[in-house]
Length: 264
Image (cartoon, rainbow, N blue to C red; front, side):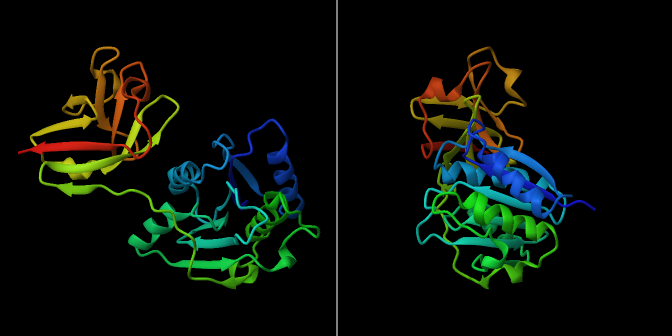
């Protein structure tokens, strides 16, 4: 059976960097199926890359290898690391990119293995200071997909870098949530799971000077331009604007506070 390798980067598609990585992968694992997640992560935006990777991984088959390269620290003391979390495998820079997936794996009790990718046997022969995606991450991920055990790729570690992602805070009025993602439509995802509002007779959302009464089933259940609150496809509370951009309407930014007021 062919192993699937996913690629997530901030390289864009203009300069051929993604194609170079694919060439390296297929030179080592010619039968690998390579899936592009996104190469449009804004440059150096580790946080957004982490969310993109977290979103897709649950839908990949067991044994998949996920190579993610949003790597502003390339060429520094930043470690390249490999992880096996449950049945999924990861090749990433040690800069917090793996944080949401790692923490979710820890909460669910999955078996986790982590290594420093410091075995040059699985790198390209000549390693540059600026393109570890080609020279370390792609070949190491390809060897992993070809059946090399993760423990062969380097020394075990227990201290990966983590990013401090926001979490909802319980308040007397309900919940203080925070905007975590602004997607291409201008929808505002929060860190509040939908289950936190289940059973409430009345839900009110406040974001700055804007107030939204109740949750709707989907975006088209209110008049055009109106702000709505709903449960998104990952089961988090989200704010949208009907046929518009909630980000533009509200001026909201990542990290802004959202008050979720519960009655009943």
